[in-house]
Length: 293
Image: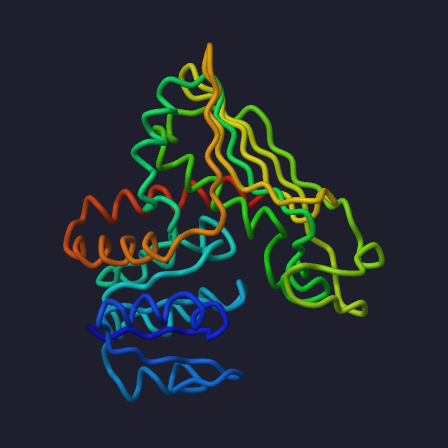
């Protein structure tokens, strides 16, 4: 198997070791960090064909890269939040019918997912949280510039929360009760971060708090994502509230095993149209929940 990783920050930290453990022949692209090629065009011209491509670059570059590699690969994995909106995602898939596209939904492949499904079925309320104490990503960079990132925490962390929701219930039958995305901070308020560095002369025009609620059957779902709470701890967890009891699971960062299972599952189902129709439905729905926040 031949795999191309585009973007060697997250790509090098996460995808390279996973693909190496799977025995893939790996090629890399990054214009700034050490890599095999500096451009995607150079990589595809030389290698002609890949089995998988993994796009781990800034949000505004995702679609152009996906279109560049589409004719040269079987499967394209695009990191969240996908592309700018659901219409752009639909057009991308329609333009390349012989290529499979998937927004990365790694958390759906955690070993605990079946247990979470069981608990959700008997819960009155399910809370899915990713509330960080002080983790605004590189304040003042493209992460916090709306024209480049398309949004803030609603595009960075909320897709993970929505991915859980899709995996744990019949998401298409739910009703949205509430949606909120707000900017609670400005760049002058931010003197430090646990993720990257602060560029005090940059741009900060994105939401840093997002909250969604859904009613699905007898169960209420509460999804929250926060870059900066100013508390003394992070809270990445899923909680199940039942009539006479409650269960809480700490989530933390997604394990490499989940990424590997996701990749293996996509490859195994390469010719399974039903699998890809389900992925498309989920990816469109997730885009729709965040594109107007």
